Length: 396
Length: 162
Image (cartoon, rainbow over all chains, first blue to last red; front, side):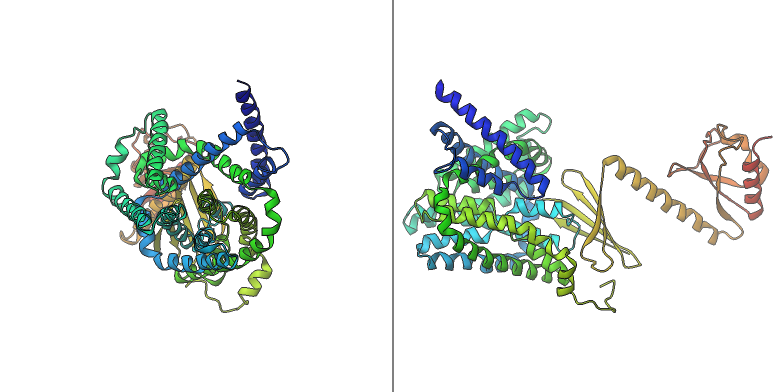
């Protein structure tokens, strides 16, 4: 009984703290994710006020659910049609994005001597922008109407979709499976992703009919149950629970998806917070100082490559110079996926330094990104990239 | 005029209206039903300088106001086709004796030969009002008739029933 009491007290106090942090973040206009990570650092391994074992267990399970909920919501946000259209129109942008941002991470890991698996993991960490942070950033800066915004969002769509193939590969390889078994896992996930996309496109209505949009309680419990079930099955097949959840999100479409998004959002907010806190908890603050410099160096390089990615994507869409810079800078924050990737790798025992490194790296890009994104609005910046000309036409 | 429809994955749909004057106006419809109207920068046509969020009610009203004025400009275009016939908007003075009276009380058609084809009330267009349509202060009457008839109507409306 005593343990449960302590658990309640600790979890309650921490959630209360997170709520204050979220509010502070909102007030100063930054994402709460870095604050959650720091809170986790303080209460975790080697932190100031270490939590009891029970609370840690709770956070571990909470974090697992957090990943599942983050990913199912991501899947719900995209309709299958949007995914297909994104794939069709922005595949080159997506390819550039992968090449420009994954390679520096991979090279860096090899340089640090983390081996090929470490390289594969760090490549993923530097590759994927945080869809959540970027989308919120565009909203907060009032840029949803901007011409470069569809390019930015398409890059995010492709990245998220690419994760459905990347994560199973990573999960299979890091647990030291033979290449053959890894290939099976990859084949399963590729088939699953394609089948689910096709099924969702053709029979989305029938799948969604399983749930009733008029009874929110059963909808909430039903979608949650289906998601966790599929996530578990996917994990069993080494396809990664995150991918399973993402696919469920994609398969549910139409009005059911809208309602499910609405009812799941509060749940996602709670468990996603636990997920970020848990990552901070798992990181020992004492491991941070040695990785700060390399993480900063990699952050600078990969922020530059992300800017280039956005610049290229926006230019291909015929957006002006300033818009290209805006697209580039708004893509720079890395977040939830980088953490999921590092988590998968470290849990399997690959390059333990990846944990503090990714914490530092995500903290840097997620704090710097939103600040950089405001840069193209500064008049000096405009003056630098757009020399004033008198005959600039109003219509193009 | 050009209308562009752009998908915003994960967010919704954006419809752009490019005006003859080279300005761009966007309506962003979020997946959750929220709407935003965005106005674009003159110097940097890729960026919106201002975006205004609209509630359901506000969006409906804005749509009606725009719709009414479009209908009105189509009505006023009638004069070009029918020679000698004009369309005019006649505001009902708030102190007119016709406020609170049914339209039939004006006997406008008999007295002036004009037809009241529509009423604009609070930004909304009410087409073909019947004789029992009751006037309110602030109504604008849209009438079709000869120049002389329309002048007579304006005078009649101004004077009130006597």
